[in-house]
Amino acid sequence: MRLIDFKISIVCISDKDLSVLLASASFGGTIAAVRHLVNNNIDVGVLSSQRLDAAAWSRHAARVYSAPPESKVQPFLERLVAIGVADQGKILLPTSDETAWMYTENAALLARDFCLYQPSTATMQRILDKKLLADAAINAGLTVLPSWNPRNIDDVAKLSPDLPYPILIKPRTHVHRLRSDKGIVAYSSTELLSKYQRFVERERVRAADNSLFADSHLPILQQFVRVGNEGVHSVTGFIDRTGELFVTRSSTKVLQRSQPMGVGLCFESLPPAPALSDAVRRLCRELEYFGIFEVEFVMFDGRWAVIDFNPRLFNQIGMDIRRGMPLPFLACLGAVGDTTFLREAVGKAQVQDNEQIVFCDRSALRAFLFAQTITRRMSHKDRRHWHAWLKKHAADTVDYAADGSDPIPWIIHSLAQIYLGLKALPRFMRLTALDSAWTPQPAIQELP
Image (tube, rainbow, N blue to C red):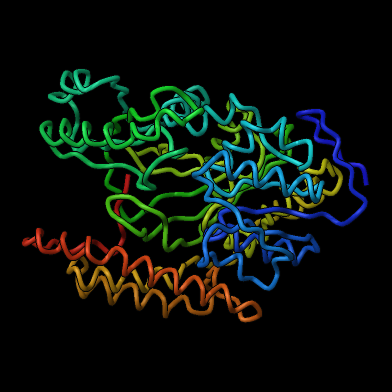
């Protein structure tokens, strides 16, 4: 079979079935994609850097390759190239912001031995740099949150008296960061100045290694929005190179791992949202983006404002697969240039599935509820709410780790949650000791 990547004019030749290589083996999107692709007769290999990587333990993984962490870019890239040379023609799908940028930045090198479905470097810069993403969203006619782009502490001092507090100190990018947090909230001018300075000093350590853009350690300031019962609206889907083939689903994030913002633990499916879907399509065209995406919105002044764009697999992708939108499969078809089959698959996916389902990382949720209980950061009422929510949705829950036919990843993921919980326990206990005034958290978590 002769496969052509038209974007970079590289020919991939393979006389065997399709094969995919996935990184980020501890991520929910990866384990869901492994099972999904194998069910579609696609061979899947997994890159793993630690023992408790759930996807690496799946019986569906045809091969597991040991590799350095993605944060160690050059060693990881060298390992990737070595795998490609030894077994040419594998499809690379981005599984994190790190790999999304790495695969794009090194497309010419990787395309010698892999099949890629990556947009241009300029496109990825506009997505992964939050300031440029906001500019693109405005150009596409979307609403964004009020933001400021100070270049130093003096600029912050000039802005601080007139800002609408609370203010989120938000990283410009998550590529090559020391931490995975989504930002810090400041509630006053004094607090803003001190937290901004600490943020810059901390992030400066990796800034020299960041090829995405200069001064990556400098955050943006954004108005912090407290989310109500409408939650964070997520539009997920796929768009092809031409922008013609396009499909989406909608959901809402109802609980997250940390405050005031964090990775989603629980999502609920939503009916189609044509206006937001059209807005996302305009944004993709403005960015000249193609591939899998997740675009997040919050309600601000009566309108949905875009806050993030993830150009990769994402944690709750298993819910979309269950709802008839086979995103990893669509990306594979795009990568190998099978436009006929891709058009047919997208057409089938566009038939909306009205099944009301939820996504929940149950192992992480139970660990979260336990941590919130022992640190007295969740009321008994809210804890009962989430236990009742789990029971209510027992029959319609998608949990990426749990699969009766592939049980070992769930065990590994549960052990990983226990390990992470024990590792974080001293910090939680210190926070509890300092926090003499306990304020219960709402059942619907708030984030910007």
